[in-house]
Image (tube, rainbow, N blue to C red; front, side, top):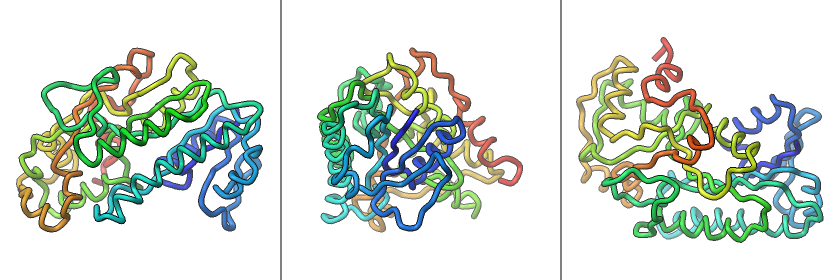
Length: 300
């Protein structure tokens, strides 16, 4: 299959591109600047501007995976918030415009989304049929992001609501692990906020699963079956790393240092992957202990 990946040079995107190549797919990475990047015979790079000028570059592709968007791990000032939202909307609009111009449209578009769309209500575990909420900044971004994705003229659209992706070479986990390695790990704020997480290997496998299974469409929660509170997550990290979980980080200190960005650490969504499980997806790392054992190994 021919698969186009936007955001293919980022953390999850680069893992996905390699997995696609490993199974024999032909991949086009859509990026802001192709530069001097070269790949093998089955990998090429296309810039957004080239795609806008010639959408036919995607003619004959069976799938598009849209992972493009500015990192939310940045200062949430006016400019930062604008970039977070607009980058996601622009990518969805550009993908939609390119597909609209194709004679043979892709069979499926997998568009990244966020688990934070459910808001911070921890009273229930949210699945894909739960109400979405736009009551805070981050959930409102995801609501608008999905609305833009809904306008993509895809034969089948999957909106992958991604939780915290755990890996050692990218994402937020290395920074979360650092305090434990310095013997300063502990709960953040009350420790009661939920962390919907997923191992990077399962993240990539789930994207492939969504591409390959024509019965899957609409929202899909990309998170492990066992979400944890921040306190329980930290205890598991401390145990796996052989470090204490004892040094709490007060909410007021985070708010003073990070401002509104502290929301990422002090609030969370409780979600479960009902649709993935219903369709037969098997998590290699369904519990946090097995995920951390694989990530930390004996080196810790």
